[in-house]
Length: 195
Image (cartoon, rainbow, N blue to C red):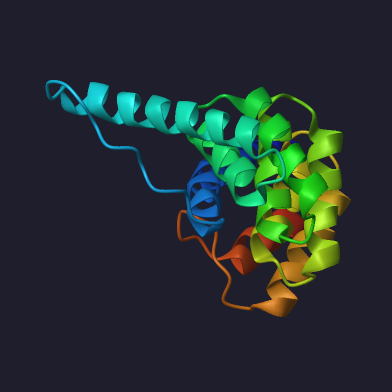
């Protein structure tokens, strides 16, 4: 019995590490950001510079969305900046507003799902991943995240296995964001269930 719990725990740890990489990968795969505004004043240090750039971009995008409330790209870009600065609830609001204008991009649905997971709303995360998959049934990031949320948040091992089986069927060489074979991870999970 201890072996089963230990293996299950190891699988969860590997998935969480992969999920963090998936978040970064997903953010990079989404729609591109609007150009950054020009900097003024003295040059800040590297960390301050990045933070200041993000804040300037956010302020610029907030202003743009107020002036152009139907600007889909501006809302999505604002969501991405909130995503990158760990402002999960604001990211959800921005993505949601963008999706009311154009709800066809599975990447935006996936990013919003990740934000729902970060705000401890796994059911809504699963709903977003399902929306992404309804638009692109082969969206591997949405399938991976569906499995991850099912396994780690909802403790629905069957749901995780089902999502990952679909991902592996679509791409037998699929890997987690940290480079581990998804097929191997799936087999480990199935073996855990068999014990």
